Length: 628
Image (cartoon, rainbow, N blue to C red; front, top):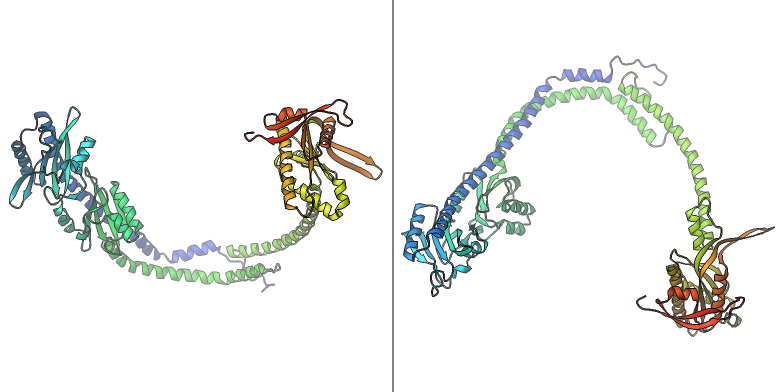
């Protein structure tokens, strides 16, 4: 109970756990049996895979050895004939017969010369000797219908200039059997004289593969360089199916990957579904050297794992006894831990539900569980204090966020009345922005609505205001696009300042903006036709040095700031704009000098401007050149 003094345990949890483990020493035998089983299982599985791979390697090596014995015969014959010459057909036939008779692996041999090699009047010369049920037979492959120079066994080694094994094929012009051919070119002084060939009959290969001893359910198969089945458990697949066509037919990505590894000359063991069934099998594969084929050996998984399963069955009984002992030991340990764990669980649930007063009572101190209960009670108390502190911080944060939101609203509202150049200077140094006037090279554009006063007398105030906003709003995108800054508005007029590090750039931007405004005016006039009379916008532009910055006006009621450009450049720009009366765009001499070559300009001569001492040379902007 809460007020009772609990007697501490005389043993820590670790010591008690050691005692329980020692009482279950009998379990060690079972643990060792499990470990032994795992190691033995892995060893047996590795041995089974090694045996399967060894079988694939030996079969591939044997097949490669036989093919190598075949390949040496035509290669040696080609080397000999290059030196001693060809001879007549009878001599060639006798030589071929001797070689075929001396090598039981050779089905037939041919000597095929290049067209017209024997004589200008004889195109073909290709004696061929092959085996038949009645003994060796000789024939000639000079049939024009067969046209041996176009056959792969002749054409490819002639072009490559080196011996090759052909892809297996059914020869309809020579031996009339399924075969593969080794062709060795005869080359003298860089000229191909012909090829010597040795054919290997492949029908017996399927019989050998089908009788391969791979257990009761295993089998072998052979793939060509293209992945075509040369020997397989299904006779219908031979030279009609490839491992890739089977993969596509049965949607088997695993089979497609295996085929890629085999045709690339890979070697290994994989576990996949069988070629003829959905049961898992182990497939070992190895390359047949020299010919580019691949030999595969398939074993049923049950057979591969049979020794492992037998071992598992025997050791399972030993492991079961050990598990029973472990269960008894764990049960005793859990009984001793259940009560304090339940108390801790209940306290944790109360705390998780929001009861910050939750405490765990009734757990004896002195061991790890008792220390855990004490730490839990301390954590609950600290958590309560932290929650109270967080609540206070939350209230302060909400108040701060409210003030920030008010400041952001104020900033958002005031930013609509602040020129972009002022915003840029504030962004450069928000703590102490430099708003003092600087002498800066600028281009100033003045525009006003022609006949504004007369229109305002004829149109209602709200409609006049809508009309001005309608026109001025259409200018805004082009002004910002050309880096202009609307500095002042005066009812029917705008003052726009253009700045850039390159004085030519801001002059071009100002003139381009004037032309864009002229187009937008025409567009809005068309859209508002019938509702309002057409509006004409007069524009004047001037470039040069001006004082750009803030002006302060201080009075008893407070201080008023403005940000503008002042000086002769600004005044002249306004006077030039006043000259335009029919929607023209006029520019001063300096602006014209900077933009000449980019815009079509018309010299309208020196103009006397109000409050300007000397006449000013003024130009009218007509259009922008297409390649400007």
